[in-house]
Image (cartoon, rainbow over all chains, first blue to last red; front, side):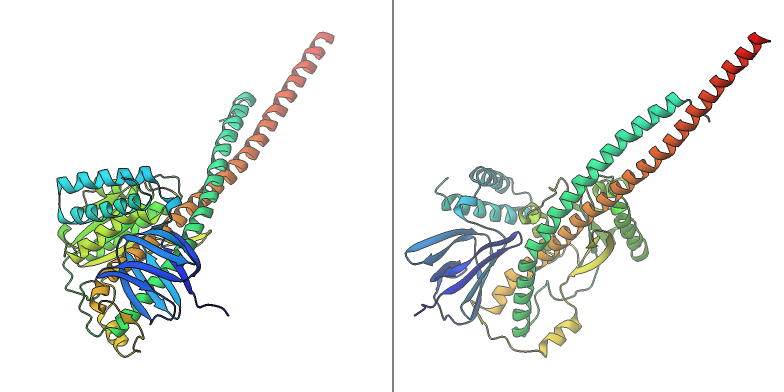
Length: 135
Length: 292
């Protein structure tokens, strides 16, 4: 008998990053972690900059995601985010530079828009570095 | 002016060199256009999905009072103008800039009624030279752009609107119909919908989705991201148009060079022939004189 699985897509403006079947999806929503198993009720929720974990058998695939949304509908899970990378695709050097730049901008604190933007950039950079175990 | 055959030959050589350059630029632009088309097609699934989500939520959510949705009294309009960094792209930049200039002259009497956000060096310098209000600009974007390249600009632009820096946002850019047809379009994207559209949506269906934590919370993040995606989508169109326009301009230049070379060759042959005729005439004349 076929076991029930989730068809998972990770979609970004630069294209589809993941499109595969998984047993479970764990993402960070604004109010905490959500785990999604097959036959979940249809749902839309925002996800924050974090690592999404896609589990199949005993393996877990990690994807660094930027801010966006998760939609669950009839065992289809769509993670719609502004950026997403698997560990192999993460550019450590670039993430480090982005982190430094963001920290500098936060210290300068020119205006509110710039500050919020720097804060987001910092979060994304730290998230990427965390996933590959760098600082 | 009659050129000597030597001068004509020089001209042919230099035209050939120019042709080589325009031909190379044509091929580069064609390959970039191919890449732009890949960018565009990668973006489509995202664009469709986010639009679908917005519909779902706006439909099920009765109270549409988010600042991004609702039109307010317009005191200042922002024009986001998309140009290229480099020239030699045919009418690509000129058309966009003329359109913006006309719009502004038609609609505004005073400089504090509008502001400009410029993408591309050509646009930035144009507005600077004319001392027009320039809120923000970005240049040096790569030919194969990723969302992250434009992220800061899209984020800022939407935030400026939310913070009340301006009350309406219009994009002015070249829409990519096909490799041979691009047209300047003006697209109002903020506020996202009009009052009538809200009313219309209210009468539609109820969404089956569960919204965690709430529709209102989701709208707060979804709407800005949706607006940002619209700007990014337009930029991809503009980039494809730029490459197509440059490709066509360079193809025309190459064709013109071909025509020029064949004209020059004709001239050269004539000049050479007349030189030969003259020399023959001189020899014949000289021989006749000696016999005489």
